[in-house]
Image (cartoon, rainbow, N blue to C red; front, side):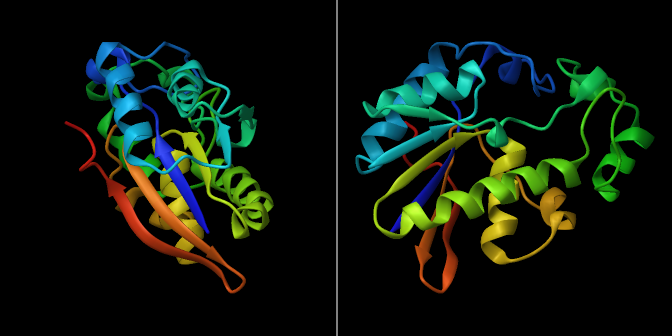
Length: 190
């Protein structure tokens, strides 16, 4: 069966180019429309799992299936950089962040830590996706971690992909393991 990994719809912070980690804004009007477009595109899932953050929960709510909250799918913690304009992050810090998965921003979380928690969540949910379709609504970094998990590669590949707003990633789950079917699909957005 299929594990659909969905990035939440847009927020005002996303539209403003801010780093958005554990801060918890709601979807904006476009984000709500994007959530509806995702639900119209995907088959009705048997199970929906979401990050605890409002933007993911609001996106997940459109499926008309009880939403299970799983903290392992929360966005990476940007620490002191949360809600900062991306342009305000010093170039040397950004370069270290991209090249060293163990780098932890002040009061934040490393990409390696985020990758391990997401991988654990995916490992735990994979068996339920053998029998029925599952949607996981999350954030840009956990979606990238899901890609790495499906491909069997480590967290160094996280910085080598881009994830669009309200995008869909499809991973088939078989008794032989995960198989990436598509990544960062946005054709459902009008």
